[in-house]
Image 1 (cartoon, one colour):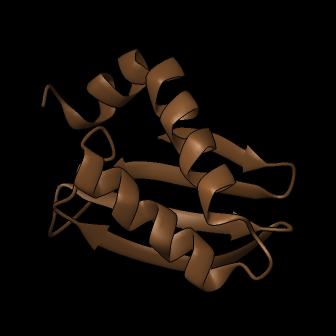
Image 2 (image 1 turned 180 degrees about the vertical axis):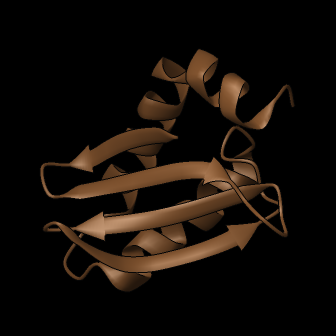
Length: 89
């Protein structure tokens, strides 16, 4: 499992899915607000945008651009852990 922090109270847990390659769980204030499986790898632009949109849809009052920027930073900083979890792109 790879856990990234987008804001002080927003985390995304990334694991290998059962039916699709990627499983995302979005946590806000310690509670799960969304979980979904997708073929969209977070290391791709489309995967990152999809994840950003899910976060923004389920967590009110977040800045879409700030979430996008944090996702880019966190995905870059966790590249090795993501490769271990999801394999190579």
